[in-house]
Each structure stands twice: as C-alpha cells, then as structure tokens.
Image (cartoon, rainbow, N blue to C red; front, top):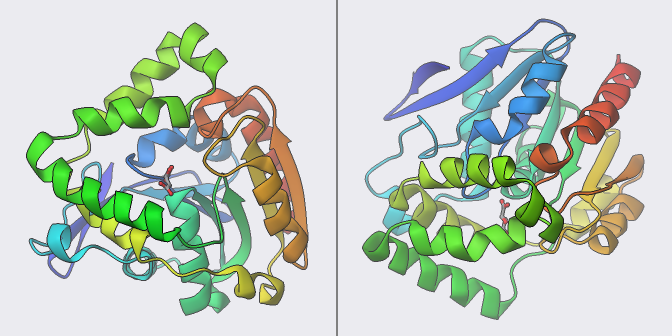
Length: 269
Ligand code: MLT
C-alpha cells in the first residue's frame, strides 16, 4: 500500500503492474481490498490503481467530513488529484463498484477527458428515494454512537447471495473483516454523501466512452434488470451478468469478473 498527502488528507492506494491504467473504485462500507482478486489478475498486463477512498481503509478524512458528509463529486475529485499527483496523464479505464459507481458518474461529469472507458459494476444511476435517504441519514447518526457492528449485520444479507452466505464462509469472513475495518466516521460521511447524490440517468445517453456493465445475477441492491436498463441507455455498452454472485461480484465470482474485465480491457488498446 502506498500513500500520498492531498491537502489535509492522506490517501492510501494500491498501484501495481504496468500497461494501460485501470482505476478501481470500491463500494460502501469497504476499501480497496474488495478488489484483491482483480488487482492480482489485471496487474499482469495493466497498471492497476485502487485507492482507499477518503476515510476508508488506510486513508484519512477531514474532521468535519462525518458531520457534513462527503459528496460523490468530492471522492471523484480526490481520485483525480491522486492521479495527477502520481503523474497519470493518460485517460484511464475507470471501474466503479456500487458507491464507486456513483463516484464514477461524477468523475465523468468533472473529468470526461481523463476517462478512456468505464466499467459500472453493481451500481445505480438513480438517486435515493426520500425514504432511503431518510434511512441513510438516520444510520449516519446512529453509527457514530453504536459503531459498525449493526451495519455489518444489516449489510451482509444484501451484499452476498444466499449460497455464498451459507457455503463460502471464507468470503463471509473476508468481507466482514473489510467492513469491520471501516471507521464509523467514514461510514457516516459516505452515507450522507450517498443520500445527497444526484440522479444521473439523463447523463447516460451522452456518455461516449465504451462501457462494460457488470452485475451479479442475484444482486438485490442493483438488480440485473436495473443495470440492463443502464446499459441500454449508454450509447456504447456491453452488458455481462455474472453467475453465482450477489452484489459482491468481485469476491463471489472473481474468475468471471476477471475474464470479462480482461477481455474488455484488451479491446480498448
Ligand atoms: C455499496 O455497495 O457501495 C452500497 O451498497 C451502495 C449503496 O448503499 O447504495
């Protein structure tokens, strides 16, 4: 893990391999370790950069972030600043998983010329409903008092398919360890940011970069139907449904995710 000081925050990131640059943005409440199988496979032929987003993993956040929230565009700006600081000037292949996908849309809005191709993975284009938004803000307040345990209990059944939960205890343990490592302040900050994220559906037909849209066949957070709808609105998109996976495709079926990614990346050169 490397790290760099960006203003008041320290941003930690993995940076492995050489070749076309692939940037992997993790979801909530996670860190760059959710991409371990992809970092290993892709770094044989690509330069893979996977940051721990502000506050998560080994990255720090500002003292006011937990109460003010961190917007998806702020996370995107952090990633752009990181790329500039480590002299990545070529347009990148940007992969965003779930919350990382919300950040991907904002990165595209702010820095379209810095993106060569996109991989929205198990993510959504719409904003939260009023009810979901209220729920997030309530949880953001609670996590500062009760810690991450209730979040893990609530999230596990949504993140993993039933089969993974019952027969792949190694994946359950790895995912639980990643979530356990998240600070309540980072969780509160991102919950407030996600609650305020805009609906980007109207952006989709204007996105000119080639896209690979990935989704777990049993994803209950961003369903295959919803993600097929995203792919249909993007002018140049391929849609791949990952079998035997819920929301956490990268960990539940890494072989299928890696194969789809490697095939797509090869065709972008
Ligand atoms: C994620 O995996 O990043 C979250 O489930 C996204 C969300 O809560 O909307």
